[in-house]
Length: 438
Image: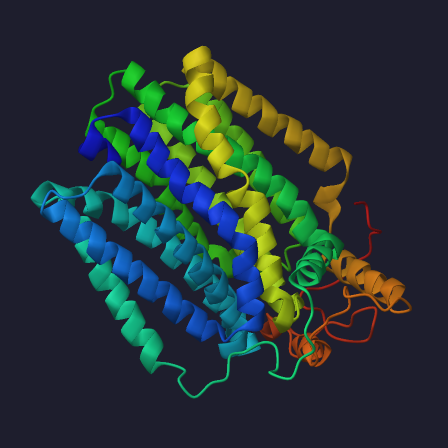
């Protein structure tokens, strides 16, 4: 939109940066909101804000009244409301979905996100060719449907994670509590490192792939198919994730290792092969395996993090793996490609991924098992009990909710397996031993 309005690549980049930077600023506050207020109401207010923005931008674009300043402001505000909605949406799922259906629900949400991205980009271009404001007006219509659905469903449910009479705690202390939970969870801590690094690389690689395609005189329509390949792969991977992750009681370390190996193969293919078909398949492989690690992490996070802390943990996770990464990658990618060459950047990304793979093997993260994660969490909880810190939980009822998660585990259709503390395994997967190697 910014490129069509100004014909300036600088403003096109500024629009992408405005959205990413707004989300960066909002992700941690959005987690605080999702843990303190009714999550359904947070979603309703967020969607209402997005509806207003879409209508204003749609009408001003349609009547040729939109300035670049208004467009950038609207995109930034949309990013703020989107961050609040996404974190509240993720946090609300364990409250309304039975625990035995939670893995399937999370996988469907992940596949829906990939499907929306896959269909939204070409549809947006088609609508824009019919009228400048139509993409925003179509977005307003979709948001209106979402508001109606939110208004009808769950009206009688109380979706406030913290009781009204919960003691008042300073926002900074609540932020620290969410960070403590994330830091003490073995799987979340390690996937933050893997996802943060690779999200940066993939953002730069996506831009680099376009440059490589132009240099090899690939037609624009083929470039569009190439870029959509990761979305198609991610959609398929998310649909198959419940079966692939549960097949053979798959352990988290092996999932992380398989994903990084596949990414390494895909990025090296971009270096040595100049076929658009191979590039498309490699980019689809990135999306397919990426969705596996996303679903695995989301399932574990929803099942093991207490309800009253889930928003803050989700906010921190998104901040560290997307919010703080993507704006830098957007700014870095174009300058790095211009300063060197597309092939050099492709090789650099492949080398970094290979180095990440070697670190995972050297640190034995590939041997991480579900019982390691649970034992580490229980050990951390026991160590913190004598100290009355906010790391325990400042919200009454959190421990009871957490215990309910433990006693009714996600993935229990695979059978309950005893944990070190006597409860069932939180993912319904068979334990085996290995110490914590953080």
